[in-house]
Every structure is written in structure tokens, then in C-alpha cells.
Image (cartoon, rainbow over all chains, first blue to last red; front, side, top):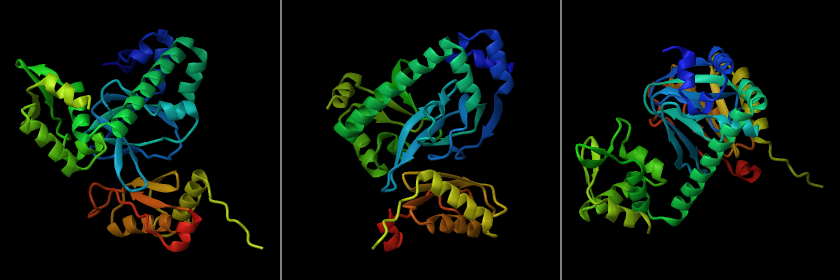
Length: 225
Length: 97
């Protein structure tokens, strides 16, 4: 697919006049990262905004005790790196490819210039950042007020979909217990115990490729604790 | 009269570390990425030996004001997941931070 057509698929850009989409498409550079490769580091100068063409990435932040906390998991058409660019700070987290990913890389200065020129784009960026703030409020609430079991129950419900008349959470190749623990702000052993507790209560069933949610209402109740 | 030492900013620490990498023969030819947040140094890049992996971390650790190093540099034999943090630095460094 043509680069411009790909960029116009992204909600943030679809309302932009074609000439601006074309300008973005000309400037954006496609870069490939293999699983595990660092895309940027926390504390690096924010020089670019990234748009995911395909694949999954994670943004994490390391605590001073050495524990990694997941901030975001993003995939196709998601944008990252923008907060640091618009706040003129360094990147607040480290972004790593979870699988082979292709990214459009747009220089920070171009994005800033376009946002100044096009109010529709600026409004869209504000909306996205507002959503991100709400997401982080929820993350803080999760981490500070909820048990690991409750966090796991909520995360599973949020990521569930129907397949063959079963409510399941598909497990990506990289969805290891370690990655899930980073996502939930805990460690592997604690997460493993929490999931097995939920399994023993008949709320879910852990299978190799997916987690089957047997009792969504029960899980929702556990998630509110 | 004693003089209070000012803690370097993250940006200053980053510049010092990049300068050290450029000046040291073990790392001068390497393309290493450095981020510093709240005094913790984050390293990335690809090197061909575990010795280079260790040298980079040691050079960064040795900078006054650094609270820890997260080493995500890819190298043969480097620990995976490729991250390590060293907060048990020497006592005088702890005072600095």
C-alpha cells in the first residue's frame, strides 16, 4: 500500500488535507525493529514521533528498585513518543519491540510545525493526550488500590473477545508470564498464583494459546475489589 | 567552609557519559545510546563482546551522580532480559545522589 494511504488510515491524520498527508508521508521514514530491540530509552531526547505500521511494542518504566512497570502496550496504527515531543521533555519510558515491528518515524519538529498550522490536528492530539491521561489515572488506581488478582481480572476482561462462542483472551507469542507480570506491576510468581486462584475458583481456564473466561460476571466482581 | 556539591541534571549526566564513551578506546568506536532519567542511566545498542557490554556499564556507573545503570545493550552472552540495575554503588556516590 502507498505510504500516504497507510498514514491516512490513522485516525489522527485522516481529517488532514491530502497535501499535509502527502507531506507527512514524504517525511516519514520506515524503520524495522526485531523482537526485543529498544526503540527508544527513557531519558533520551525526544526527537521523533512513531506510528506503528505493524507489530506490538511495549512502553515501560524502571523503578529505582529495578522493577519494570509496563505503561502501555500498543499495536498497528497507534502513535507513541508524542507526549515527550509536545512537552519538550525526554522520553518518559523505554519502548521495546515485542515482536518484529515496522514503524513510521516522523521528526519531532515536523509534527510540532503541523500542529501549529492545523487546528484539527492539534485538537486530535489534545484528544489523544486526554485519553492517555485517563488511561494513566486508571493505571494508578489499579496499582495503588487493587490486588494482583483484581488487576488480572480487569485486564483479562478488557482484552477479551469472542471466538467459537467462547470468551477468550488470545495469548500472543510474547505474552509470557513475565510480560504479563510487568503489565500488572507485579512479579511472575505472584501473578502465577493469582491466575491459578482465579482458575481454581472456576472463573477462567488457562490454556496454551489463550485464556478462556468462564465466568465474566464473577471476574468483574473480582476486578472491583 | 565546606562547599555543597550540586547534583548534575539528567541532561548533564547524559552528556558526560556520551563524552566518556567517545574518549575511551573500549567504547569510542561503538554506537551506544544513552538516556538518563532521575539519575538512572539507560543504555542500548549492539556490541560484539561481553567485555564491551561491561565496559560501557562501568564507564556510566563511574560518573558521579549516577544512581544506577540499566544495561539493555545487546551482546553475545549478555543477561536476558537485557537489563541490569546497579544501585549499590560506592558510599560516596550514594551521598552525592
